[in-house]
Length: 111
Ligand SMILES: [Mg+2]
Image (cartoon, rainbow, N blue to C red):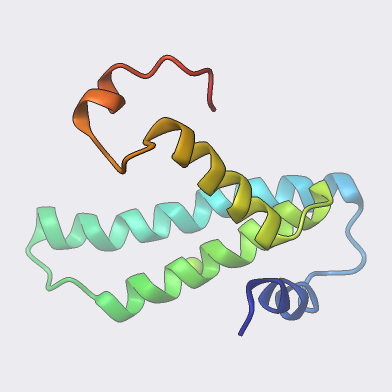
């Protein structure tokens, strides 16, 4: 599946009654909520001795993707553009791949 096809299919499950403002709020709040669910799985593994539930964590990543798609959509972006923008930023930050020195000495004003 292509990334923009995912966005199109995922957005078929977006409540069409939501206003643009509500979609924006739902998107960023959903990102936080689903990230929290992902963190909780890792917390249980690291702090409570549970086996790492890889499948559950993978499903949370999918939920995060849904909210990324929603937030991108309301901003007028497709996911391929969002990902391309991110890679371009990373290429500037780490032109030769990750290095500790580049990380510590970041000078560019990149979000
Ligand atoms: Mg979830």
